[in-house]
Length: 415
Ligand code: UD1
Image 1 (cartoon, rainbow, N blue to C red):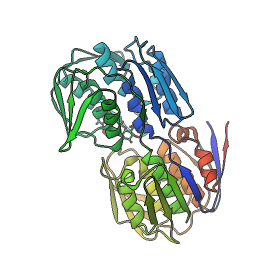
Image 2 (cartoon, rainbow, N blue to C red; image 1 turned 90 degrees about the vertical axis):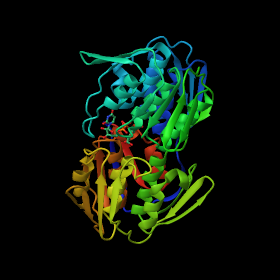
Image 3 (cartoon, helix red, strand yellow; image 1 turned 180 degrees about the vertical axis):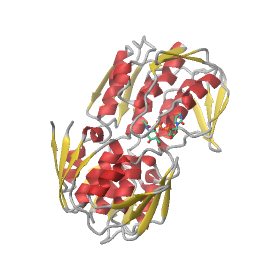
Image 4 (tube, rainbow, N blue to C red; image 1 turned 60 degrees about the horizontal axis):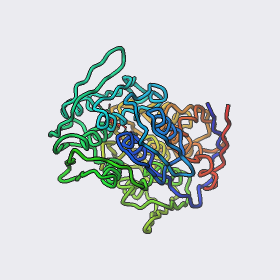
């Protein structure tokens, strides 16, 4: 596992370009498994999770190559409906391959995903959706088989799961008749997947917070450019805010940031934007925010919760964050305390802002928590070491380079 060394206390300054959104590219690559033809996806970040998806496409019999931010795929050779447990198990989102494989072959098999660092990660909503579409599911010795001819129907999700919505959308493109998903995920990444599928021949509409999918479509991959990564953008904006910095991000607009934009404004940061850039100027001391509830879109995104917690740990006053998406997303808290943060866990994170944090030796337990620790280290005085840094490279393209471009003092030690 790599380790990151950061010498903190420098203001982040400068301009960087935001990469393509990991969480949009992943379901788009998974959807390719149901398609024919040759595919090209632009703005595809060169990060570990995307490479895992490329490996899965290859395992299924397709050809795929990621080169300089573009994914080239030839899908005509796909001849297996079995999602391999290796590399599939490395990444929970490999379950999103089910929708396309089920559509293409009428059958798919995959290993039951285990829990993860964020807590129990059930897949009942994925299976509920497939069953509602007419498939049968069977579990033997940790393998789940989903099989059947799909028929469009109305599906009401008890919770707007991102992955389940995406899986159902993809599968429903191949079902007979129309499918309506009520209470779906309306995350920008889900909407980007819909745009991609429609480009490839699907008939999907979003109306009155429901998703309508016309079935029996033959999907043929077409060139597509994925949306920018709002989570990556938010991470660097919070980092700049914490260090009293001034940065510009190219390739993203405020509409893509949603509530994150409002939160940064509330802390007192000055924000400006143009058609495809955002710039942020921080103030001497950030202001606390009374209460933020982390919830599905358009609520505050759980993937920015650790970074937000880190930022508010140096804001003036008391802030409360309530995480409702992944209740187990709290392992960064014990590490933030090592920098001198004052955070109490009691039905939420109660954060009393500290003026200055001190460098510390900490451990990343997951991707976003790891990024939050790095932003904290950049703002803290002195030197910090962040262990288990490989988590961070799963989701951030050129992490070290981008922080260096912004003037941060960072080095990556590969053990
Ligand atoms: C996706 C994102 C992840 C983000 C999350 C929430 C990708 C690749 N990953 O993950 O970065 O943190 O959305 O925005 O896009 N749940 C169930 N049953 C299910 C599925 C989910 O109860 O069948 C629950 C989960 O336990 C969790 C909540 O729903 O509490 C959210 O999970 P979900 O929206 O499915 O997240 P993912 O799609 O796994």
